[in-house]
Length: 173
Image: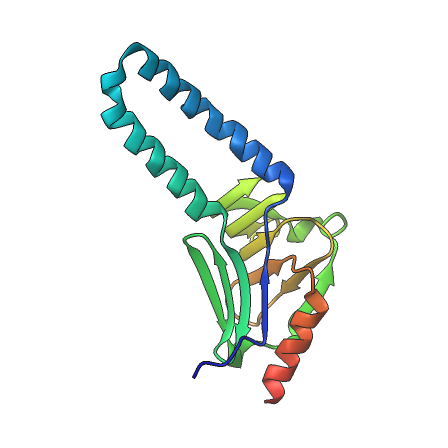
């Protein structure tokens, strides 16, 4: 029997990110409609291509999860994943930050992930050049985990303090 996670939360892209994404997807759909109006035989190629693009976008953007269990902290954003082992989780290394004021901790360079207005997910380089796994849907309040070794974790859970308390409880158990 599996135990329920000590903490679990979905970090969803904000409405503006979804609106921009929808606008970007309307361009290829409009192109496909124009081509199909001229040559209906092109449907055998264009429709599967469009389905593939829509499925890829859904996989890359939608599932943004943060889960803490006895094995560690699991972060997931589409195809991108990162796990911090339970033994490596130190609650004293978590701190609440405001990225409007602590600009050095902001994501600068996306290495593998998604960047939409008011949403960042996946692997990034921060302004101070550190490597980080990021799940952000706002600048404040954010929570940063700066381990002694390994990549930084930068997230915006709605219940950030509850996450740190769950990590603290996990360490005692």
